Length: 119
Image (tube, rainbow, N blue to C red):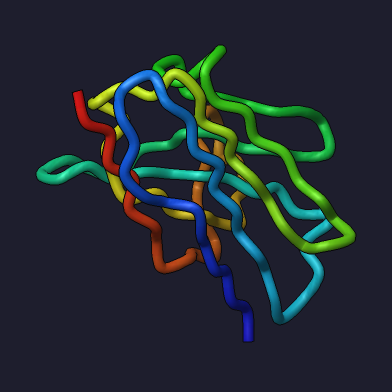
């Protein structure tokens, strides 16, 4: 059974940093693209970042502030978030992803971790 478990969320003041982690279990995902999405209250879930064997991809809203990385030996993907803004407040979800055209789609999802950025 595939399971993705996120951690590292919390409360931070604007300008601060957080690092999210996502541990995958149930199978090895070293050959799969992994990604992060987020959903703010009253809004649809949106793509944040993805990492594949080709490279890394980011939403325009987080470029130069967020960094996605992975440790295949640990079956873990990370999201380093710097210079956080109140508009980054959301539940962040880890996912095994694939690309359809120009959009990233989730195949397996974690339960989410809350990130709250205060002004």
